[in-house]
Length: 323
Ligand SMILES: Cc1ncc(C[n+]2csc(CCOP(=O)(O)OP(=O)(O)O)c2C)c(N)n1
Image (tube, rainbow, N blue to C red; front, side):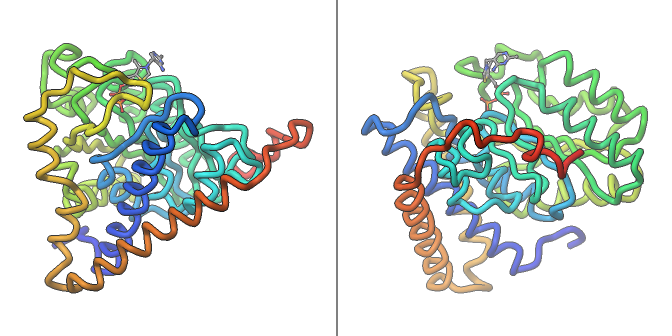
């Protein structure tokens, strides 16, 4: 089928999804031991979106992320070690230990960064798309954002401008059913937020966000048309946030039956089932074990790395490649 990932791409998506899951579980465990600082926004259950939506992008394509960006970082090609080092504020982190887990960036990979201000990455990604268009670059911009961010005014201004100017951007809505602790039903009168795209004359597609192949196909089609100069598109990926809003969340508002139903459709399991006939269960289990070992090694190394000397930091150097 057109826009389907190759088996090699699917294997890489599967591997990266395991890296992200292990990263999240390890962070959760360290939080319980009091070894993390500040809230961490885990993306367990949402790995397929961040990893598969970014799988067809090049390093020259830009991605703007959110406060819940670990799958976006790994999907866009950052190694887990500098991400872990950044989360723990070490000088070996991808932003030399200044960004923390919500603002990880790596210009060499086109990861412009996470964003702690809800909705703010949407106009930033639109601006990046405008710069690509003005400079005649063959690159697309992608914004991955949440259902809470979709309710902000700036989201609509940015989408209107992107469609009006046919900017090379893809909007990927990670619809995980909650904004903070607020159920999506209390945020919006409609279930399918992407129907709003029609109001800007922009195509959209709704996909199962726990199915990496479905995410890849839908996003891939939008990326292709954006690259051809046909303007922006939107993909709404339906998923569920399995953990709390952050590691500081006391919980209690997510229904047990919902959590159980979505766990039964774990994206890691779906990815495994999609590949097992072609690749074999043993090979997939080996890939999974290697991903776990890679994350373990990243934590061990990063946690013994030094903290930065503040006078060494040069913000202009960190972003010079993006301008
Ligand atoms: C402008 C702004 N308003 C409020 C907040 C507090 N806040 C942080 S995350 C969040 C909810 C975001 O929901 P969503 O976009 O669906 O992302 P999710 O946490 O579900 O991944 C809010 C309200 C903020 N960081 N920035």
